[in-house]
Image (tube, rainbow, N blue to C red):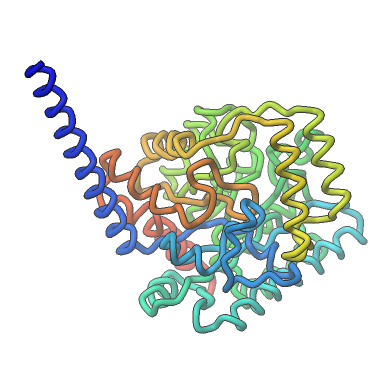
Length: 406
């Protein structure tokens, strides 16, 4: 009995010690996180800027993955800013479709500037790496602008100059379908251009001339290879995960990761569950979700009140047809693998917030300190963490702008 009591007491002591150690580690991780310039390269939040009643100054945590980024949660999660995305879905490529894409891109650019003007005391447009450091030091949130899918430029590629003057500093070539500039990694029709089109090659050169960082996320392997070869500056993958852990066309293989690193580029790791693990589709669930979408319309047009009804019905469908969900551990597995392959100087974070990103245990940006804690626990230093969260990204921005034509 005495031995049992001693053993039990020892176990309790160990538990107490382990608990205290964990608490200290968590506090240290939070300190490191707060001392770090934390940037994410892919914030699809501008999709919410036109939603009736939606305001970035409000906490929209109750909306789940319908809204994952706002000022209150940026502050809770220590997110100092990142790239607000001008996303345009790939539509028809006839003249009418190109004009529609052109207008949509410009409208989204305007919505970003309107948001920044309305909250000038909290957020500020960044055009350079030095801007980012200055803005963060002032206590404001850093606001870069990027474009996902170059479709808004198809009718007139020279519009890239106007976008640049209005703040664009990162350009993604494609999205989920092929476009006038190159092939997507996920177009069911397969390759159209066998990489970049002639217009795509010209676009790469124009981006280099302006000092705009080129982004090969969503692009086919051939586009990645050609952009990497043609670009005079390092390129990025703004939100991409590891093919070695889940073989998906949207992910990147280890050999290309090493080539990206050799050219000075950076991969920012995606938290989109469907690219982290295999999530089988349930036909009944897909049909129910499609019917729900038709009933309510596009998520980006739902008012705050309409969103409540939409989310309630969506949760009923999810409960009726449950599917496996990616977890924080799944995300960290991809991040740690990519760090091992590419090296700490060539990895960042681009979780695809408000564009499908987020996993169980990291549902919105308020949970970002968990990444820092996990990195420190894995043996990475505070200097490594600073590189991953922003240092590598800012280096690429500097290098892209250094080769720009005057």
